[in-house]
Image (cartoon, rainbow, N blue to C red; front, side, top):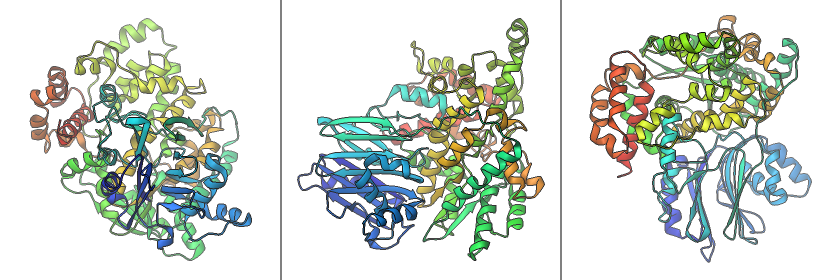
Length: 620
């Protein structure tokens, strides 16, 4: 796991600036390669995980010197791929997955991507054809951003902050990105907050040759399944796929553990890890749980029960008392506004877990793959709700729903009921966007003093889904937006801030392809995350396997009304909002509704705090 960066038409100084910005991603070493005529350069910072020797250092050149690779990630099936290459005559100089990837790319070009199982972002320079190939893994676990430069050149990096050190990158604010940030609480790909920097979307390659740039997809999940099996048949098919996804991610030459929340996603992973440790005679699995003083957010008891059941070496890591002290570093890590406060927890958890392990498996992605979000139930229920006469739904129920009170203490039932009763009257794409977006289009227009209708990135993605089935379309949309833009983004940024590698078995692309072929009715016939619970029942105590979902979130509503109240008043004062290009009046109304307990605007307020902090940090 590493940091990568590079540029065409570059120099030693520009490469070193980007390298230094990425030092936290790779504290175990750094390397740099530059064409003699400065037409291209690559840099790398290394976190040693597989093959700790210097033979695995990067950037790595091919045996004939024609190709040079800088790579961030892990290829879990590299040993099998290596055997195939050796059978064809390749001789290796290291035991690394980096060299396997390099040799595979040399022989097969971008077609090699179809053979990879893992997470990755890489750049391959071909000296002979003067071609730069950039690629990002199928789900977008590893980040990769790029910037067009003057003279049709290009720069790239693992992080926005690294590109911002390049003197030729356009750092003007993208106003459309600000609007989309307010909608999603993150800036959806391909935008970043900067007009001159873009995210390479998951499952895409970028090819630059002599000033010409092309971008194309090489993989995308397709939730349009029609296979209808019995529950037992489906469980039998999925169980080995889940087990393989976990065991493949245990390859490591450094200490490895598991984040254990007590929910079924991470508990399944920990249980399989424990089974594998017993089978191979390895030491007990190391598991880590973050604990909270607020009972509504604390899952230590469930986690402790799972740890006892599987026999793991369990460690409880109390959440730091003042996580908001991490705000400035949190914003720096993303390089742009990012409004999901769960990132603070991952920041804190990663820092503490890094004292024990270098690699941790996590359960992220289980909700997207196995249909675990309440909004999925809402989408299915909406089709039945629309059978109620329209005059009653729109003329009576929806207006009354606006008066439903809300809680800011972590209980979301009332808010979800109100959002359902208003959103379910809309067409499916608009309905789904209304549930997952925060500042709606009207609110964004008011905030930004804009007359033009704002973009709706989630609605547009939904409309491109290959299936008309509402569950298919919702899961497809989340895999292309919420998962990479939100969950995977904060997982990578916060863990790599502390040189900790996270691995995510539940978004193994082979597992996703298996699940996506199953009919929507089968995926949810017994409720949310139905099939994953069937798998959990074979590995965990019954009450854990059937426990209701509890999100991993900080008590932001409570904090904003107590310890953060003064910060809100100070940072969101009218002059600061005007400097951000925002109208203070709607923000004032939002704060009043929140303080009076009429609406839970905690995430909107936090998003505005983050935006103001980023704006101040960037010196604007």
